[in-house]
Structure formats: C-alpha cells, structure tokens
Image (tube, rainbow, N blue to C red; front, side, top):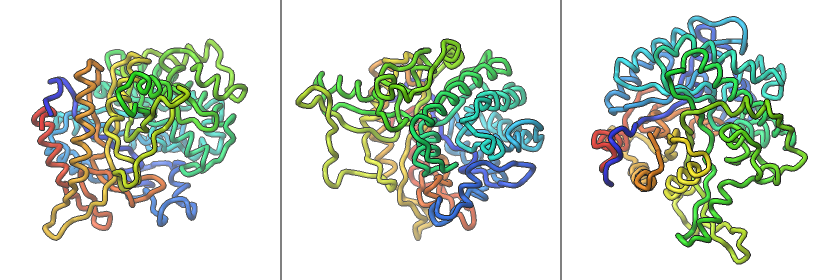
Amino acid sequence: MSSFPKEFLWGTATSAYQIEGAYKEDGRGLSVWDRFCETKGKVWEGHTGKVACDHYHRFSEDIAIMRDLGLQAYRFSISWTRILPNGRGKLNPKGLEFYDRLIDELLQAGIRPFCTLFHWDYPTKLYDKGGWLNEESPKWFSDFTLKVAERLGDRILDWMTLNEPQVFVGLGHGTGKHAPGDKLPIAKQLKLVRNVQLAHGLGVQALRAGCAKQGKIGWAPVGVVFYPATDRPGDIEAARKWTFGCSNNHVFSNTLWSDPVVLGRVAPEAEKAFGKALPKYSESDLRMMAQPMDFYGVNIYQGTAVTEGKKGKGEVVPFPDGNPRTAFAWSVTPESLYWGPKFLHERYTLPLYITENGLSNIDWVSTDGKVHDPQRIDFLRRYLGELKRVVNDGVPVKGYFQWSLLDNFEWAEGYKQRFGLVHVDYRTLKRTPKDSFFWYRELIRRKGAV
C-alpha cells in the first residue's frame, strides 16, 4: 500500500457511554441507556455501562496508550447528562471539569480532539418529557451544545453534532432493539427525524456562536453503501441509485437525512418512498437544517453488492456461502470504503472523514500474554487499500478513525463484541494492546504505507 497524503489524519474513535463508566459519580444524571440496561432481557447477559472501561478514572492511562500508538486525532463524545444532569437547566461543574482535563491531556500529548456532541445517551429526564418527539427537543440540544462550546471551544477545533442518527432513531424508536426501546410507526419515526435534523441545525448555530467560527463542524451519520458487483456502467449506476434510495418502512437512508441537512431540500427519493407519512418541511425548517458544514463524517463498516439486473432496476447480489464475516456476522466488504465515499462526495461535495470503521473479532489474551488478532489486521489492510484507492481518485477524504481504541460496551450486545485495538479485561480493567495495535502504529508512522 502506497502512502496516504502527508496531511491525512489517523485516529481512533470512542463514545462516552461505551467507555466512561462512573455512571452516578460527580453529579452525572441518567440517560436512556442506563434505564434500558436495567430492563430485563434488553442487553446481552444483563450487561450495563455502569463501569464499562472505567475511562472516567483511567483517561490518563488511556491517553498514554494513544500516545504510544502515535495517534494524531481522537474522536470522543460528551455525555449530555454529565454536563446537564436533568438534560437542561443547572450545569454540573464536575462534568465539565472531567472534559477539561481530558482535552488538556490530549493536547499535551499532541493529539487533536474531535468532539461529538450526541452519541445516543439521551437524558431520561428529557425522554420523559417526550424526548426527540417533543418540538422543544431541538432547542434542548442546542442549549446543551452552547454550554459545551463556551467551555471547551477554546481548545476543540473539530466538532460533530450527531452520531448515526439512523441508528438511534431506527433501532431506538423503530425496532426497539436499542434505548429507549420504543416501537413507533414509521410516520412518528419520520417526525422524529425532522426534529433531529432541526437539532443538528440549531447545534451548528450554537457551535458557531459559542466557539467554532475558526473551527470545523460536521456530523457522523451511517454510510448506507451499495457497491457495484462489476465495473460495468450499468452496475455502477444501479449501486449509485440504491445508495441514494429510500425504503418506505425504515429510516436507514443517506438521502432522507442528508439532503435536508446538506442540500436544504427534501430528498426526492424520500418523497417518493414515504409519501404522506413524511412530515411537512417548511422553508424555514430547511434553512435551519442546512447550516453550512465544513465536512461530512461517515461511519462505514460494510456494504451490499448490486447489479443492474434484467429490468435495469438493480438487484442485490447474494453473498456466497461461507463468505467472510466478522464476529458481529457483518460481511467483510472492503469495496464499501471505496464506493461509499465516492458516491457521497458526488452528491454532497463536502470533504469527508471516515469517522468509524473496524470489526468485532473473537479476541482473548493468549498464554504468551499477548492478543493475536490477525483477522483485524487483514480487515484493516483490505479496507484501507480501498480507501487509498478512492483518495487517489481525487475524493477528498481527510482522515480515518478506527473503531475503536478500546474494547467497550457494545450497546445491546453488551461486552460480547470486541472492536478494540486494545483488549480490556472487564474484571480487572487491564489494558492489553493487540497485535493490530502495533500494526496500526506502524501504519501511522509510515503515513499509511505498509
């Protein structure tokens, strides 16, 4: 693999609820995930995020690990209820002090902080007032964002408003598999989509007002990727069309979310798919949603192959029997890290960051005291090869954040899934860098040439 551009950023990503623990310490309020974890049968083997990786107490140790890794950038999220225990109103100084210390130590280590404002841990106090369905919810998010920006924005220059809104809406309020566990009809989910998009727009305004006139702002949705089964023009066009498409019974779409936020319009694909179920977007709504952004963050783990098909409408190509899969049973599709950025840049024309990519693997500490994870190394080599290819083709991908630095609480999967470059023993909380950690360190040192 030849090297990436000199200015390309190499990082890792985490989120607050998945690693911090300390769920009732120093004034932190409860989130919907705290409540969900206490509900029997919702999380694998009854696991919770009460302790997680105990990053709240061990962040200095974790930053030392990042320094050893040679990280240039670190993406993390702010726990809303550490800052505002009730979701709004009175500030919690100790919560802000934690992020003060975290950011200061990152900067001292020469690591550039990328901050996500919302990574799913919605305050229970606000959920009980209607949550994202409440018309006041965009303002609640904006107020929280402004408080964070005013306190931390003198040191953070890179911001993301929301992580994977398709997931916290689709799984949290559609299928009920994630917190808060609601199963809403599609029309109500779409109302929630609109409120979240307004929250994004108000959040961008709050960041600009609070600190980020000189900084960079984006967001980090799921990249729903369809890639062509062959290089035939018909297959490529079919994959492009499916990547920008919408289904009428779920919210996992690029264009449903990003056309209003980036282009200031309702996606034609969404209007066709949802019809009358789609709420009305006024001109003022769209102006608010489409605040200028500096980059488009996207989380890509996998994709689906598509062919033109006999009738030209596109057809999914089934995976062959025994195709490579991660421990999460996600198919290994390196092509997604080429075609996803390529198609998204065609439509939205913004610089991109790959804000999450990685795999869950079956990892444990071997008898030699090390963690050998050759599958992760092979996975990263394949995916990053495709990312390098799209960069060579002129798509402005500015950086890559591997998910994740640490094994962590993987939502409804609990501690079953291990995504980290660093193994965490959840009994002792001992950190053990895996073989992939040292591979990634060498990749960073050689600027992507391995």
